[in-house]
Image (cartoon, rainbow, N blue to C red):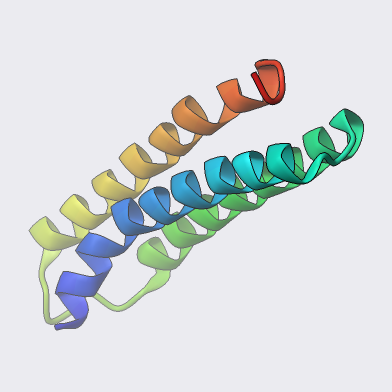
Length: 101
């Protein structure tokens, strides 16, 4: 069971971060928060998501894979890198776009 969680966790974290950051953006637009404050909060959320993905890769590299084997370790690490790239690719443009269209 632990191996399945290690494999599923990177993309699940990307999905949660994507939903949270864009949900935060929408919530900030509806509450009328100033643009500077909203941009700061969204930037902090994006940086937190990137740091969490990088930390997950570090954890996957350091965790014990004796029972799972090298192939599953490689799959989990590859998915971790893909999730990190996906996090940057999907969340950073939200910082560059205008707020509350």
